[in-house]
Length: 132
Image (cartoon, rainbow, N blue to C red; front, side, top):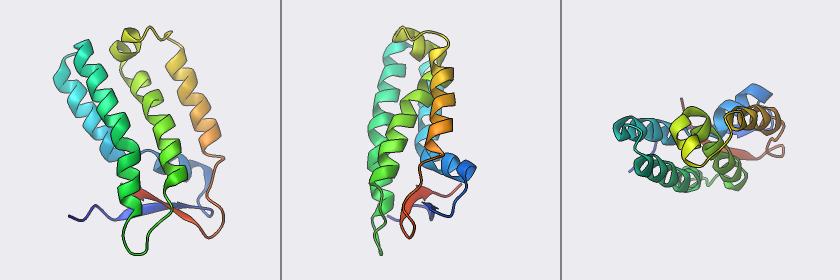
């Protein structure tokens, strides 16, 4: 099975390009679909978030495989940090389940957006990410 062609985060990408590429859109789409079916039942929301959070580094690792293999570790770490922030910010019932203050997910998104865009692979190295 071949995954979609990947866009790569590299040292030449600008700040906004890196932010847009760090979180796999396929995992976000799966989370949205599952939570849409869950009808805000806490067990489903927590389960969907957990499964998708586990899927993030596995998906990024899989994108890094192939010929030639692509560096993926930094991307997997950043995506694994970003996903729970995004999930809490887009699902108030999930945030409420974990008793996260209302403002915290928004602050998390802002901080991640500011800081993650500053991180880029060293020159000559590329990180796998799905094409959009």
